[in-house]
Image 1 (cartoon, rainbow, N blue to C red):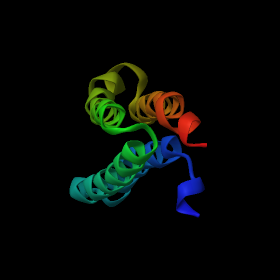
Image 2 (image 1 turned 180 degrees about the vertical axis):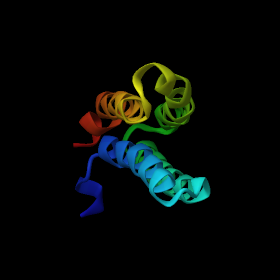
Image 3 (image 1 turned 60 degrees about the horizontal axis):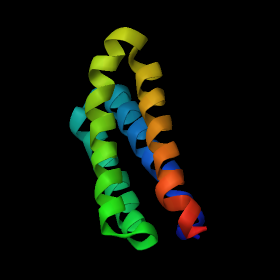
Image 4 (image 1 turned 135 degrees about the vertical axis):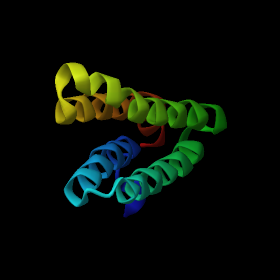
Length: 102
């Protein structure tokens, strides 16, 4: 069943869920656990579906989205920033991995 969930959704859920958990609990490290778990799960599937180089690129994009959401939040606001970068990672994941693995 887990293999049927698109990796883009897993990655986006990690970014959105990690932020939501960190904000809701006021414990950044708990949000980091969610972010890391979803990122690791997505990376493993990216590697199976599209190979190592694509997985490395998407993992880099995932981490860059996390880092980039912070300065972007100053312009858009926290939630819009997280949603924007999550949509970007989900789109890249679909284009480079999910579409191939379907």
